Image 1 (cartoon, rainbow, N blue to C red):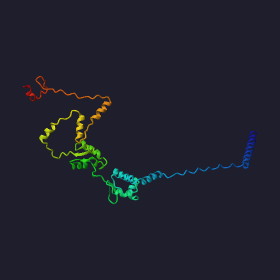
Image 2: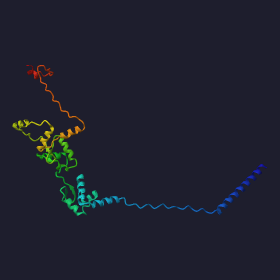
Image 3: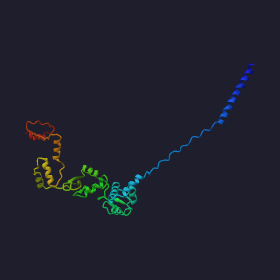
Length: 276
């Protein structure tokens, strides 16, 4: 009896579920279809100018520059690198079209600072030296001195080598008062020492020097020499900073007398005559 009631109840649930499924299916058939979402197109990318525009403008400005400016640009390249460049390589490195500009080509070929072998250009210094050893050998060839201005462009660090040679005592660097230029003189120990006449020594030692350093500097200038000091400037600077000028006190000479206590007991023969 209970089993029969359970089967009847199950049948009713199946009929109810079946009718529900039929209703859902009929609703879907009669429902209006939804429109598909519209596909939005991505905006077209903005038109970009070439990334080389700025570089091309720079190149154009160089090639339209005066001939002198273009020549300087090339010479600076040759001096800084110390390499040889063909016209095509110069164009690549500094954008100066040597082949397309006859005025630039002719000026470079005839420039005193430029060497041209028919194929490439290179920098031409007054003295062809490459290092400190060659620099010292060159200075030693000029016993009367060689102007530093003639050496400045020999190679990139030539000024540092000049100062190093000066510090080591291999050369002297002295200033020429007339031209205000430094002159490099050799200090070759292989050269024989000059013998100075005794009369000249007496004359030199008999010259009385001025007591004031300013007067000494004036005398040097009168004789065509540049003083290494500027006492007037130094004193004015000290005065502006409120630093009083101090004169060095003269040291009192201590003479050895019989009352002087001799401390060098290990050298009795040195003071033997003083005790007698």
